[in-house]
Image 1 (cartoon, helix red, strand yellow):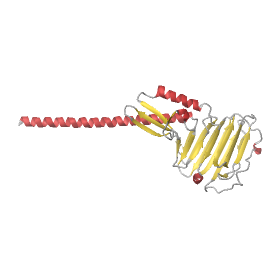
Image 2 (image 1 turned 180 degrees about the horizontal axis):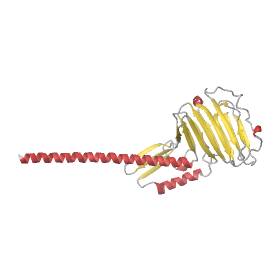
Image 3 (image 1 turned 30 degrees about the vertical axis):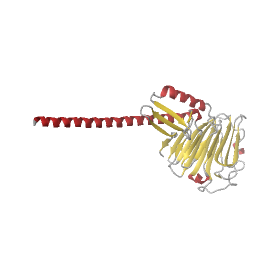
Image 4 (image 1 turned 45 degrees about the horizontal axis):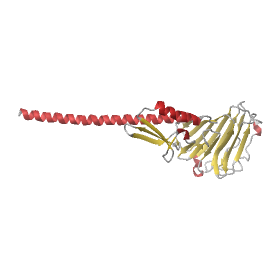
Length: 299
């Protein structure tokens, strides 16, 4: 009898030990998976934040308002992206971490080939340059999405030049309104405000408050005492393209603030470029479009 009881107790002990071992192993795996996931997420977010800083953009969302603070030109951005990629691979990443930048077709690219187009979704509105030299800027939105913009404002300060003529002589040609009069809130109609300051504190404020993106474009050219510095912008339709803003600049140092008030707070930003972060040891990865870091404020 004692032998039988001892045998049963021994078997129960072995089964309990095995169950504990399985449970402990499962728990350890869950903890490991959680730590790997956190490490991937941290690395992804950290690289994304660094890229946002290098591109020279400060982006703020305040409820339905989205504000881009930018500087023109963008000298050295492409070089800094290349240097950052070298630093990241040589000094930042641990041996078990692997990072790959991908184009929209999932083909590997170098970071200095990062797309210079930012897309605001779900409106498919684009904020883009020809490249990160930033001598131009194009802001566009599909016609059928344009009534999502309730208001747009452009504030620009030229820090290295003074207007070459009195602000009363600066004007659009042709005027975007009333030749292209439209009703705010309807597709294609943009309400806007423009202010340009020079380095002496002189201020030009556009007296026009609406334009239609499908109407003949309106030009505004501003020259400065330093004749190598000028800016030109237009709004509306040009060569089959519809612009909320088309900006060209030559030898001017510009600080800009461009804000949009949308009819919803539900929007987000993307680069077409993707980022893939992989833990080599666990063969676990995270791949997603690079989402720019947005500072969100409460009103």
